[in-house]
Image (cartoon, rainbow, N blue to C red; front, side):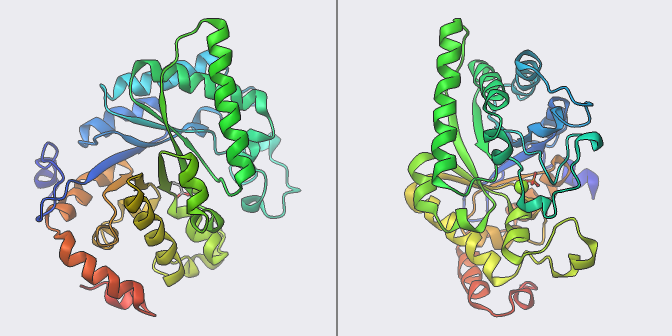
Length: 317
Ligand code: PEP
Ligand code: MG
């Protein structure tokens, strides 16, 4: 079976009815681009940059170190696009144990991701400059995690502009980026007009979207049985995001675990998704599902799943 899958590496991901599907890799370190290329990924859909920041006993990577890391990822993908997500650490993903502040009673609801970045603009600007510099060497998309508020979006846009001006003042080369937002808080999925006013593409983070929609701590074993990607409310938020982006001609992908789960591929295709980002080890299995799929038929079936009170019962299709 593994050999059969390996043969799909160079096969384009196209459905039976001729729809081209983009299969991208999630990476944590620049070296992971090797696995992404070996799996036939057509780009990096999510570079979780926080792994450069974690476990360092207090010091943070400076602009040069970050630039070198992003540049290595860009070079490693040989001209294919690389989506770099700004740092997603904070209360729920502590930088190191020493800094971990037990006073956060609800870490997942606390100062994490973009909230953490906006609380320390100098740190955030350092990262933005490093990403913009890497963009001079290849196709880079800049992805912002955990946005919910218009004010956060506007502050982020202003800081990106400032980072560009800082580089211009220093006479340092930088390149253009496509700007994307993670849709992983229900409020974001319910404010798509706001997001699409500012962003070129959206990436649905189902791991957090499920956690926040169902009020289930994704790290708490005692409620893991209630963590349900197929809850009708979760499916509604995902589908509305995909449909609205498709309608407006904006890019949309899913980069949470759902995108690499072969039992979900057909449903996501039926909802209109054409871009999936996942751990490199899942790409060939998902491609196998894509090659067997007819999106026209799946769209009709997905409509029924979305109308069902018990979507899980429809999944044996
Ligand atoms: C997600 O929330 O689905 C996601 C991709 O981000 P992370 O898992 O890094 O929070
Ligand atoms: Mg997330």
